[in-house]
Image 1 (cartoon, rainbow, N blue to C red):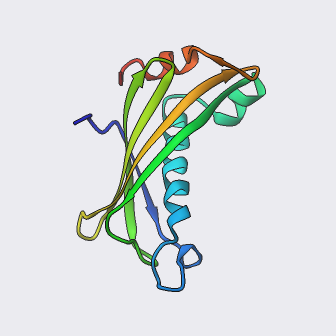
Image 2: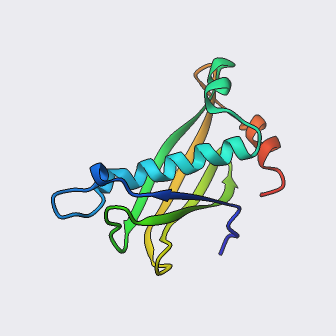
Image 3: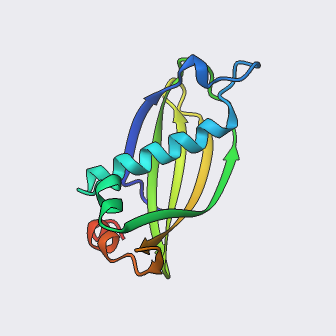
Length: 133
């Protein structure tokens, strides 16, 4: 099991829920993405500033396993564990409800690096993530 290297605390908003009162499935991907962006800022990188330099981290694959639904106003943490395989960074993420520590969703998100639109070695990310890999 990979160690958790970052956590982000969030709260479900009512407008994120479906007619059944559960968080709509698409919002889990948004929670995962928000946490990855917060992690980037934590290590000193800014997604928009990187883009202006021609460096883009692009999601190439997403797998989400839904376990227990979140509902309106639930507080939860979204975690990050990280590995690198070849040119890909793989973010292993969990969404855990704070009230009972239940795992609500598991995500495996593969990210590749483009420099000026071309698949490239993730050097800027290698440097930023070196203490986690």
